Length: 481
Ligand SMILES: *[C@@H]1O[C@H](CO)[C@@H](O)[C@H](O)[C@H]1NC(C)=O
Ligand SMILES: *[C@@H]1O[C@H](CO)[C@@H](O)[C@H](O)[C@H]1NC(C)=O
Ligand SMILES: *[C@@H]1O[C@H](CO)[C@@H](O)[C@H](O)[C@H]1NC(C)=O
Image (cartoon, rainbow, N blue to C red; front, side):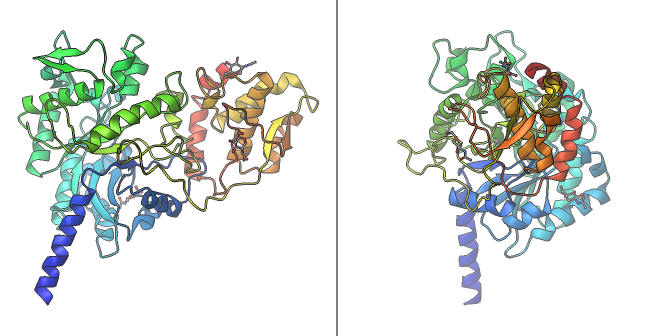
């Protein structure tokens, strides 16, 4: 039976990998003060039929939880390790330690290694321009030498700002790689082609809208617009297609017209900006998911089963808010693994299988920290709010956000509670020089949720991050007071 059994097994494996094609993937970021335990997240992925995840590192705890599942994984090398990976021995160690080691029966199905994360972002001012390509080459070489080159591909998730349309009317067919990195991009895409590796791009219609107040609102969604962009007889009615096809044109100009493209990130945030709310997020996904299910592709690449990773899986309340307050609200699930709105990832219409919540999530007790007006010196209130928000997430208080309608006391209570929850409800964390007190009464309003944190150990790494964030936190605290 030996050889037949083996062949059957091979064809089953082949079947399996083709099942994962086209099934929607998600980005699983873990920059949360109290991250959900990886085991709970993996179960949630399974319960929701999610078969592909993209990570931002190669964390051992995360990968151990994924071991033995049929979930396909993209692990990642953070930007700050790119320079190190210019040394081949270091790249080899990284691959040994973070890829090869999981390659066994019952291990982790690593399919991609993301080398850096948007390393050519214009706002990095060229910081990673000279280290990314050598890191990519070393990592792929190490993968090949480990004998995994057929199944594991190195790629580089890039922001859509690596290409543009220099023509005056900004049509997709004029797409080219950005002039300052054109040579490097050309070498990179040729390297992808040689290795049968894909191009990975992050496309954010929300950010187009956020960055430009004159951006036509309807063009960010998928229901058509009265003013399409005309390009050689093609009418572009949404920025997603136009953006994707600008890349298709740039690849063509760089000599690799058929290079496969992965959408590494796409999504819509639900709070932290006037255009970030569940209503618009739902509208966006309701347009995106069915067209992915129809394998519609785009005008320049029609009828393609796009490989897509949504951004993101869960909210991350310790992410940098440099890009904007919305940055902590990209999850299709909230911080505790509750779906934010009904949604069918398979794109069926009408929706049939809706998102199901994380199971076995343990919460802290139903206790909130609120303002105590008679307890202390009210002139110290502003300082205490600043302090609370420097070490927790107050982004929902911002303009246009879910908790923006609170009165002054509500604002203070919200800030105090976020700090109290971040600190795992430690008694001393609700003192605030006498201005705080603990209550068992739910303080939430219809719009604004006063959360109870989950009972997981605080993430010390995220906490260190929060300390750094203190430096930039004046932006939010000045809004609150
Ligand atoms: C493997 O990945 C982890 C997590 O991203 C990283 O901290 C570690 O340095 C990597 N190992 C090596 C040998 O580079
Ligand atoms: C508090 O009330 C809000 C709104 O009614 C509700 O959604 C939330 O689940 C409640 N929180 C807890 C911990 O019971
Ligand atoms: C509460 O905070 C928000 C945002 O920080 C602010 O816009 C609002 O004016 C504050 N409300 C009061 C009554 O102070």
